[in-house]
Image (cartoon, rainbow, N blue to C red; front, side, top):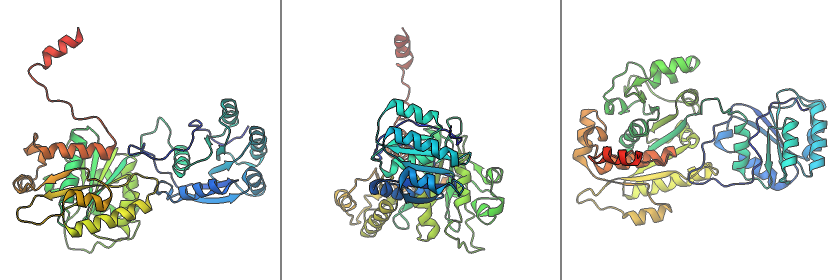
Length: 422
């Protein structure tokens, strides 16, 4: 019997990600070695290694299949995960028996085979194989299988990170990010944290009427202190389900960061909070690019003008190329219908982006201005306004939740309830 850990997810065939792709938790820092027999499988594993969810994993690919793996580990320690491509039921089982003799305890094995056989699958699981994937495989299959090894049913799910950014400055991206987070927390009852990444000029504290003494800057400038307890002390509670990691919004220091400056903060939030909304400022640096690419879902806020169109197109192209196994980012058009302002038609904007906007928000200066000056969300001052429903729709799309808001009760509700009960 092979002594490595077992966590099987069942045999599965290749599948491309859909618009409602399930949430796959990122892999921790582990070593993965793949031994492939075909160029197609090697290419799929190589592509999977470039996925954001395997960014921390150290992946090495070799050809030769089972025989190469057995030979490689005769005089070398085995990695955390071994991915084996093998053909033929008998060859797989005999090869695994030989591998067990040289395999270190704790190593997990994923087998890629071409036989869709229940008896073979049971024998593989009996020998301690962690997962069996039926070839041909797509990169997302490899990502799902490796990441799934480190997600147990009893463990808390890793939080979903939603990044909201503006195609240009002044398009209202922060306002939309804060209202979406409010809707996720209030209408979807999902514990959420808003992280204001615009440390110099962030407005989340103003929008939520909060003035915390500490915030995200304390975490970024003290990376050695970051843990769950430390982050909890920095959070400012806005509602029962919504907390804020506020920006200092002061100019007494320069906020120049390295590419991985926020990684520890995001990882800690992921481990404790179901949903994290990043208010990403309109600037281009290593850490803003990393925040967008590593997010689970992305919303770009644009206005109907040429600069927004160009920048949205550039962001779409970059993000789709950098995230081939994720669904494409979403975008919304904001401040549509400004009097006397020439605007690009929605149909022309969508044609250039090759995607329709998730929603179109009309220019409502009095409504948004009142909310901003009062430190309130749109739903607090206009619960029945169309914009409130638009924020809910975007919240549902970004969190992958299809359920609509509960219908408002009417005078007939008690009577209907009694009739249905009978």
